[in-house]
Each structure stands twice: as structure tokens, then as C-alpha cells.
Image 1 (cartoon, rainbow, N blue to C red):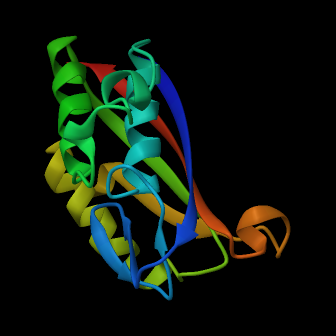
Image 2 (image 1 turned 180 degrees about the horizontal axis):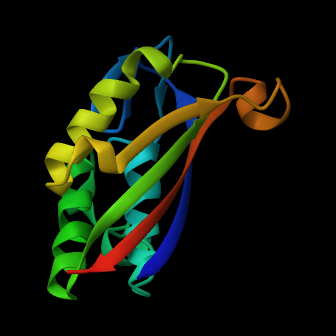
Length: 157
């Protein structure tokens, strides 16, 4: 078994939605990012790459590479899953926490779980998505951005 953890953050900017776990979530702002800025998928990819001791998402998808401009982050997750499988592992489970004051994650958590399970090719029961606030403290508390952290357990197939 191998354990990995990941973290991602994006600042809010112009827009009317954020991508979270492959789901378009309405919000009064978007995020400033090179790709679609999906903090959930980015943190999850980093957790998988970390468990495999393969660096971070920036190593695999550098923001300096124009191929990834406005990219659907699901492609990043598919790559991470392919590497996981090539090395003889499958996902035991993933636990993801979105950190923000808004948007509210609860109404979208099930759809995120479904989408992530679909992309990974695992049971929805292997994916946990939840949220917390920082009690109005820090950049997320002031509504300046959004963050996510993820922890994964990989098991030998």
C-alpha cells in the first residue's frame, strides 16, 4: 500500500462558475488558472503522484506549456490513473476536502463523487468529497480563493 496527499489553491477572478471535481458549480466568480482550475482534481492528481513518488502536477503538466491552457483537468486525472495502473496499483480510496466559504459544496458533492469515480474507473464508495470553511480566516475566509486537499490510498493490484 502507498499513501499520498495533495493540495491545490486558486485565486478567484472573473467568471460565474468554478470547476470542482469535474462538475461545473455556479458561483459569483471563476478562478484564475492556466487550465480549468479544478482544485479538487489538481489536489487528487498530486496525491496520486505523491503516492507513486512521481513529483507533482506541475511536473507532468507545466503551466508554461500552452497545450494545457484552459484544459479539462479530467485529462490530468486520467494520466495520473494511467501511471498508477502501469505501476501495478489501484485506488483503495480517496478523501478530498474543499476549503472555501463559498460556493457551497454540499449540494454538488454527490455529482463530484460520481464524476471522479467515472474518470478513475472505481466505485463511488471509494471517493469521499466534503468541505470546510476557515471560519472567515485567511484568503479562503476572505473569499479571495478556493483550496482543496486530498489523501489517497493506493493498493497493489
